[in-house]
Length: 325
Ligand code: F6P
Image (cartoon, rainbow, N blue to C red; front, side):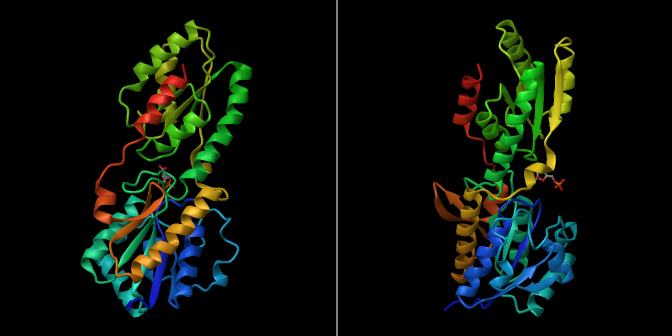
């Protein structure tokens, strides 16, 4: 018999399309099992400050299609302190919360993992970040929607790039990872994709462009991951020295990648993971993330999810180089 009678749910770190679908799934699964649900607003800051509000089935109506998060989110340095976590624990106890579902990225799981070691309230994580850079899960909520946003924007940029015969450097998000860049680059037929997982790419890019220009191949789109060698602006500056008579422009897509209505894939992923997160709490699980591997839901300990590195798909990387000749 589960000891879980009341759960909390929060969103933390960079928001991602699909977080609301996950909040909805957590809330409705918990209510299905006659649990009470407390929404914790503004992430871990809300847990420390006591920003709690009850969630009912109707509270999460009409949100599955909305980007952002109805619970708001925040980055919370205070939760990195024992004092902050102790205040949070005191609030959870006074609210009689028996377990918490945290929706966020690796920073969120790092904090949740430390909390779980210090206090006897279980935390289960749902990977919600557009970066898709979390070990132990093939996909994170928001990644698919962000990819579609990038490709829609780059398809438009390609129109003007080819009209002016310009070379466009398009910078995409991903913190220190190239997942968004690699897959969106393939999908929009980019002539080159620069990611932090590959070193010294500017040199490679120079010879690649020289070869293309020799063959009169119109080179229009280069996708640059934001964490790569200073980003698109810096890379374009370096290249301009060698291709003075070539017209170049830079577009930094920025936070548009974090918004928009979640894709079907992200809504279904969020619904699956929200359901399994509540099941995991009820099964007595703690300090772990629900993830998806080969389309199966798995449980991955926080200490592995945050410590181990997830590499980009090397097959896709190879294909991207061949298809852009
Ligand atoms: O982690 C998601 C993310 O969008 C990264 O891709 C990006 O580098 C970062 O958040 C931006 O953080 P902020 O929203 O705090 O500017």
